[in-house]
Length: 253
Image 1: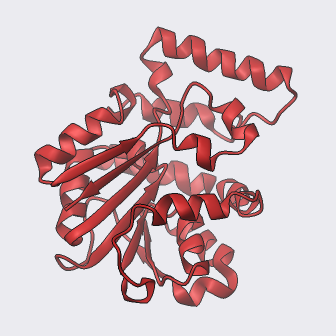
Image 2 (image 1 turned 90 degrees about the horizontal axis):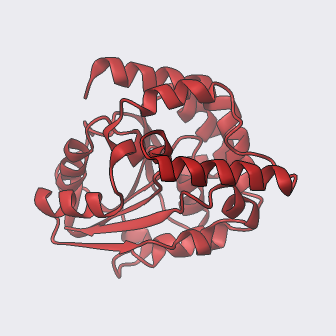
């Protein structure tokens, strides 16, 4: 992983920790938590939750880890920014004792081989300077038959594709027309755009690029759901992100 890019990512998300945490707290009250949990659990191995080891990579302010803890799991949650982990612990509140928090990079997990039944991530993989290294590392820590469940989107493809830019601009116009909050108007948004220009995932045709690379890495099967956004997004999110629909990728070891 490029040290310069990694430092830029850590600095950006450290600065965003408080505001992103506030948004995550709002999400926990939007009434979509059961749908998010269902979209995860539908991909899990058939195993009692009390026996299952689950890892949330790039937990940020803890959204996925909190949902899992509330549902009776005892997940591990990692992030590369101490500020995000501090916010996650606060947001978890009474569930924080069920979650084991770790400061780690996604491409260098301090876990033994074959530790986890499931790995989940949301809005992380587009940040990865070297996704193939991460996919190999995640495969390493999965048990045989374990699953990687990824939720993400082509968030910054509009920086490289004129058609995607037109669709992105239409989203901004529609958000303004409906007098909705624009989720892209966040602190230092232009800084993240600059970082995204140097990240490989911003240019890829996802999720099929991910599928091909995961199969090359050694995953036995990779399943794609391109319209998971219909299940887990609010109406406001669907308007904001119409040009960047969220997909789900499930890789099985």
